[in-house]
Amino acid sequence: MPEFLYQWPLWIVFVAMIGFFVGASQLLLLLIRRKLVPSFGAELHGRHFSSTLISSMMVFYGLVAALIAVNVYENYSDVHKVTSRESASISALYRDSAGYPEPTRSALQGAIRDYMEQIIHQAWPQQKRGEMPTAGVAMVTRIEEVLFAYEPVSEGQKVLHLQTLQAFNEMAVARRLRVDANREGLPSSMWGVLIFGALLCLFAAGFEVAPSARMQSILQALLAALVAIVLFVTFVWDRPYLGEAGIDSGAYELVYEQLMQPKAD
Image 1 (cartoon, rainbow, N blue to C red):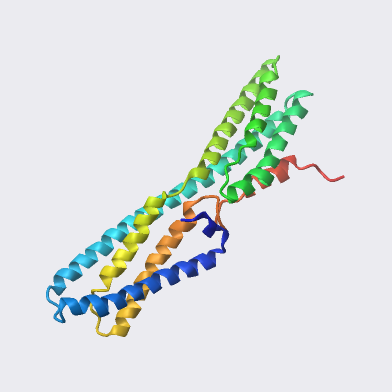
Image 2 (cartoon, rainbow, N blue to C red; image 1 turned 180 degrees about the horizontal axis):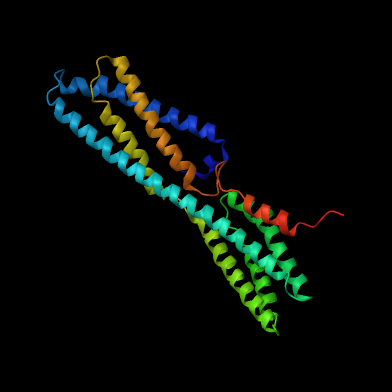
């Protein structure tokens, strides 16, 4: 899906998708009634066969669309867990830094604080726009340099340093996963299959015969609305950071406010 759609309010995208598929279903139905059915003859020979075939198409498309929607949601949920994992590891790293002697403690806490501020105020707005954040690499390297420059002396300092390095490694891995998630999303070819398959099913459904033309139009519109809802949900979850439903920086902001924000005098 085009990224600019994620900049629109979700209700507008929802209405637009419903309108597109319902309108397409009515146009297809009109085409079938006026052009195709007369050319095939008025008799409904083979009706049971066509009904079975159309139902099979609907079931097959519904299964594919549902599996894709579930996979997209699982990916969205996994990315949400990655952000929670990174914020938790930063919290643990900052708490561990309190056990270091000066000047290592101040240097380490300052580097972690700068990194957290960069995530909240720079990286996250970039991710919401679909951009790849890169400034955090230098800040992670700065934290690493401070940690590697420290030489523990006592056994207690060695244990603390090992624990801090583990928290740092966890943070670095989680950061890499968070940044890579900016590339997540269904390829355009898959979206093309979903949309073309939906239109194909609506086209096939137009050959079913209802007791009246009005009823057939209503049923066709309801089917189109259902297809649009499934595709809308897939669209919302497809890009984890984009749009109103995108993952926000709340987990990072909470850690910053509770641990790192300078206290007012």
